[in-house]
Image (cartoon, helix red, strand yellow):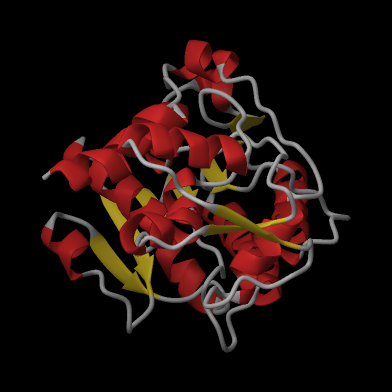
Length: 289
């Protein structure tokens, strides 16, 4: 029995559907207001609960051999914060997994996580990684870089769809290994059945590190037209975007995050998606229809 936590999120839903397609016996932890009917119709068993509710996690983990968790507080609000969900909530889940005798715990972290990070998300993920290592659970930690599927449409989408300039925080020349969600899904599935993944933290990025200016140039080539770029100072706010996105855009101007994709491709069979291929599929092909 596999328990998927976060199955109604973008990444968790994709992983859950792939597991069901493979014929896996699967349980999902869901909150009452979540839209989980399609997963149940596809064969998943739903358990109502919340990472903030330890008793519900005890019920969810009963009889489970493997846990895959992608849950996080990004784009949530109210009582759901990086502290209550990504830190304390994951601590609750680890305790429940230990008590239930879970034999595999696959945790979705973030590349660059550290218990002392000034970023609330990276700190919470780093603390969870630390707890997992000390728990005695057979774990695998997946560490994706920034998702190209999520952030790039927010920043470049209006320029493509409405003819607006792309506004970048800073100069947009820092290079990051933007990763496709489908590649992260593939790594989760591969790691589930690989004994060599136990006890490992596995970073995953795209085919090559790129800057925001590289991304815009690539989309220009795919569309065959120029996309103007404007910039605002580091720390400035991009209008109409959530605080989390503004924080991420500022953070990305503070460092580079190159990830060598070859080891993951060789060890786990995950061929990294390039920005060119993703831009063609996301922007150019729909524009031609």
